[in-house]
Image 1 (spheres, rainbow, N blue to C red):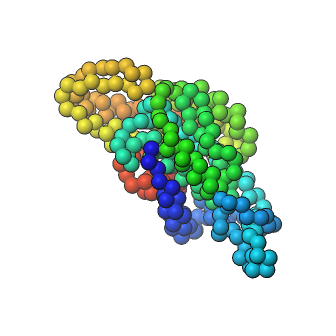
Image 2: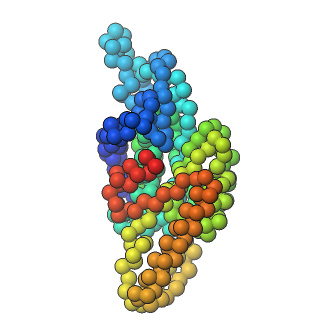
Image 3: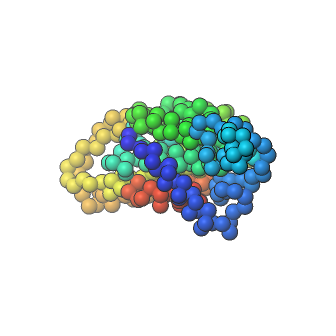
Length: 288
């Protein structure tokens, strides 16, 4: 993977722009429709590497020559759980349009802005089970560590969304938002079963589905061999105009079936086109 950490600096400017554009919808400092809170100053603590330098009290530094961070009441009152599908089907697309890379950046964006808004995040990838990548610090340094680990991840193998998400649901013990990044290439009922296990009165679920341009419109003409990346099952077909239309129709039907089931459960479900500019897609997901 080739996710560059500089995109976090762009996220800072992006978040500032969102603050201006949605000021009428917000209350409190750095609040967003999905992840936000009103903050009231409470106390100070010593600065630690990775803390947001914007929270340093420079007047206090002038008196003490030591760095202190402003703390706020209700500072960590929401936990955002980010789960990114790392199965073989996510290993699709080229360059920045790669499904796993693009989807992971969406998840990392949520983690970063969550920490900026003084909330906790947990970041995991999943195949047969969820593997947590963060160490519980919920700051910029933690996000940088997660970027390194994501870049070292090789999407492979199979996943069962129902089994993985049902098992993960037991880890959620506080008011939370679960952001599940997956291409949903399973039976709609399987995806819905996993999401249903996560949903509770104090837990919201957002499913982000990355779709690569080549996935919607395969650049294939004539006789072709198609291989399932997870099971390695093969099928040879003649990909003609009529077959291409049938393929797109079945993909659209699957997307609609997943959307109908998740919406009925009360979860949010959104597609992101990996061929679109990252910040355009992220803005639509973050703002809901």
